[in-house]
Length: 171
Length: 351
Image (cartoon, rainbow over all chains, first blue to last red; front, side, top):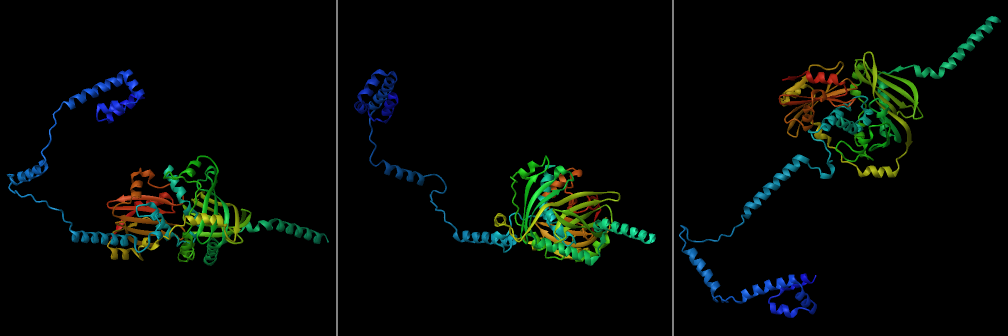
């Protein structure tokens, strides 16, 4: 537990001197006894020595201004045929976008009227059979069969068709 | 004196004989129906079905095997409530289909939506248009018969003149003409077999259904189907259809005896041209759907089956599919499968 605490403090500290000052008594005792923590300390101390022996160089004050000016100068003197650099901001063709959106909306409206008529969605049952399903043909058959004299007694049979279909699927 | 006593004894014997036979007299005597009587009975049956409210227990058997008997409880309140639930199962091997349907969804308890079709169907008079055709092809007779669900009934038998063909036996309640038992019978020259039985085990007539059952059905109310979209363009004759639409119409060279062309519909739907020819013998019928364009998925599935399985297993409503060049054909009807297959094979283009 103490090892983890000491390791965390070592990672967070800026200088070894501050670190040693901030250690509690029991942490100091642990550091004296624990070989692992002593090893960590030794590595940290070594790194600290290397950094402290390095020579400090102060950057020139106007480095950022010179850098940008030099960069633009380099671009100006470039050997490309078109030496000018144009920064083009993309312009939205609103007139085109409006026309395209109106066109898409128009197509959707025409498709909707053609497909569903003027009925609202609530009146169209979701299970309306298309000509892809057998139910469509069975219903068409039942419609014309209703002209027969005793069609009136076939109602229950129609109602059973689901069970009959499942029967056929089971086969 | 002796002569008188002998005569009295004979008279007493005769009276006793008559008294013994009297209760059975109505059972044995069948009454053949003319057009007016048949129409009258059908109108009463229609009226009963469109007006009576009742709760009943119905036994249905489509396989003629007692193990396949299904029991349903039904609640009916015209014009729009027709609620049917599987009540219990008799026999084995059937229970799994009541736990799931063919898409694998939970199936029991099954709440049916209100039965909207009845309202529009019952607005028609029962088949005045085809009554004479019906009388040519069938014999209908009436006789008093057994008690069903505790109620006295009359049996209406409809037997075909041209065999083999389906016929019917209908038992209706004497008091109100509601059908309490129905059998679809397959009549053959030397034999007859029952293909379907529907029979009330119990029935209770009521003024109105309980609110609890109505609430359940109202939740599943479906929208009115747009029938106009499906009905398409109607034609009187095939020549009329070919002249006006320039379509190649395939006509069957074989038609079962007694059948006549009853309806011609032409419609364009889902990128297909669909010609629908309907033939009837006054009671049963068959439809030929000629589809020009991309074949429907359902027909493709049936075509992909082996030829023996290209018909469905439904007893009373059979289906046969066929593909020829750019045309798909579906023949659907109440005739035996062999006849429908023969019809499909005899289709030829008529320009």
